[in-house]
Image (tube, rainbow, N blue to C red; front, side, top):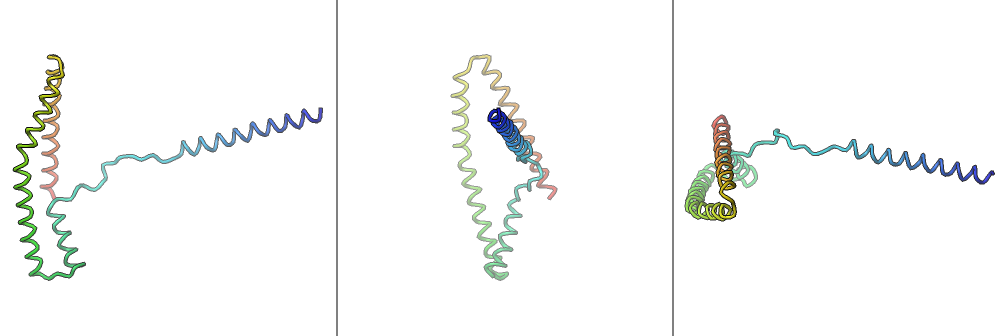
Length: 142
C-alpha cells in the first residue's frame, strides 16, 4: 500500500510538473513580440539628398576643398547624364520584353479570362500611376 501511494504521488507530481512546463512554454510563445511592417520607415532619399550626403562625407572624411567639390559635382552631373541616357536607351527593350510576357500569358487564357486579365492590368496601371504621382508630390514637398 505504501508503494502505491508513493508511485501515485510521483505520478501526480509528474503531471503537475509537466503542466507547469507546458504553461511556461505556451506563455513564452504567446507573449513573444511579432514583427510588424509600419509606414514609419524612413522614405527613400532623393538623388539630391544622396548627393548632398556624398559631398558632405567627401569633405569631412576625405578632406577635399571647395574647388575639388565643384569638380566632383561636374563628374556626378556627367555620370547622371550617362545613366539617364543608358536608362532611356534600354526602355524600348524592356517594353518589348514586357509585351512578350503579356502576349504569352494572354495566349494561355480563355476569351473570358483575357477580358479579366486586361481589366486587371488596366487597374494595376492606374494604381501604379497614382502611386507614382503620390511619390512625385511627396518629393515636391521636400
